[in-house]
Image (cartoon, rainbow, N blue to C red; front, side, top):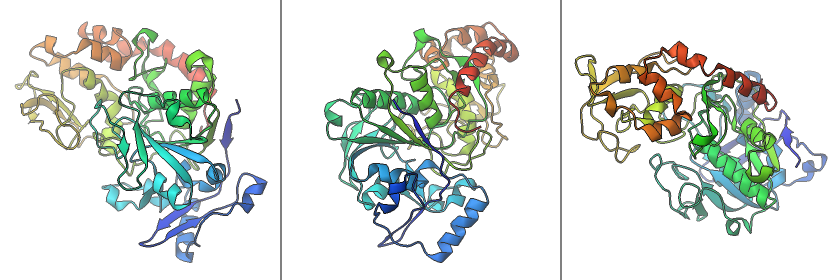
Length: 438
């Protein structure tokens, strides 16, 4: 089927007032799109000047902010949206490049609210892991429901079904996918993307993907997933850190025939503007409950492996994926300790109400690369090493049974990484075919 990748360079902004929606559109990618009537009000001169300055400063413009490229495809269609709390349209493009302390500092409107405000016929929402508003624990089953703000039906893709059913898609003409990813294989939004593409392909429904940056998109590392260890935490033979955006990854799913029976999905990708894989991008909204800031997102590829162990990685604190510890790590070796308790990010954290000895990484300068040094440090300084690994779960996260054996055997990090080299190089060759951003 046809793959369409948009490359227009028109800037878009939405500014929501107390009682009005302000909307500005540029030229469309199609000649007849100029006649498309959008329900808009004029952007005031000050806002236009500010946005023009942002354009000149090469601020990254996400796909959702390039509405002139996708609204013509949605007009008159029955639309379903795959979204969570990160699916937003920013009012001020420049804020996506600043250091963000709180989402309250960033003016934005949810994509669903934006589309409804423009009289797009949104029929329903499909929600991934953590739910539509992003409040569910990792791995927690999310129930179907109704959005209290819009009244739209919400269907969970992290409950009984991970793929929309034929019945759920009967009144849908086009699907929109807009979710912020973080570039790690076991971060489940790319698995949700797979199932959405498969469902759309089976029902001949086109999929519109609004692309967003990969904050860990500057490198590729980690073991390549072995087929026998495929799961929702990793469905495809890619390294642990894959170095692709959602749009690029969708192209790879199609191109490598990873959908059932080799079917392909009709995808249209709305590209970002001013992005490349070395771009630094501060996420304005936490992509999931336990990734609260840039520090946690940069450390996540490395500390995420602790999810397959009995070691706490900061869940149950306000420093998720910025520390690690356990009661069975040597308290004489570590000077730092903390006690996990139930909180917004975790209702039942590992070692709840127990003192955990370990390492605080919240103040270190986190480099954008993947390392085994933290998990190797924890293993070597465990008073009872049999307590470290939850073997089957660790294998699922690592994508291979070999990594645990290598750590237990005492191999150095360089020795372990050398065993990944051939797989990574092969993957890079494949990846190059699907890159949109260089």
